[in-house]
Image 1 (spheres, helix red, strand yellow):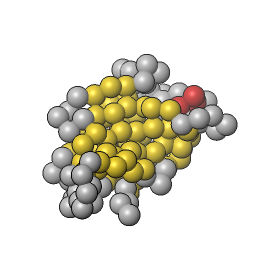
Image 2: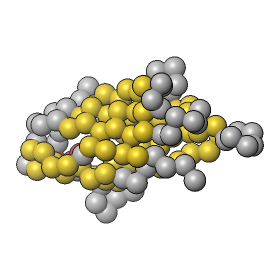
Image 3: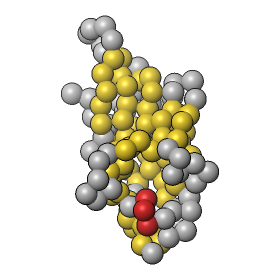
Image 4: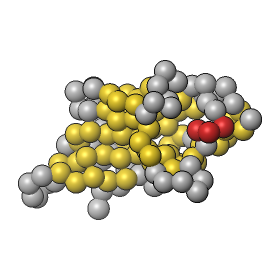
Length: 120
């Protein structure tokens, strides 16, 4: 079982900033990585994704405020969140597409989730 280790998150006032990171064990080859979030009482939604080449896509609600990046040498993805709003409050999950070691193809894995709370 592949474990993605998330860190960061916490409580911040509206307008503040937080950063998240998510590390995948370096023995794996990782393709796309991303961040999703699940607000209270709602479904999980895409926040941002980044390919191994660095191509990114963002949810419209976070464009211009959040930045996703990655360090391929460390198999780590980051999310810098600026100008946070109360509606950004959610549990944030990282996701990684990992090449299978003993079979063809890839599999998707999730981090354990980290709480981000933005107070008004």
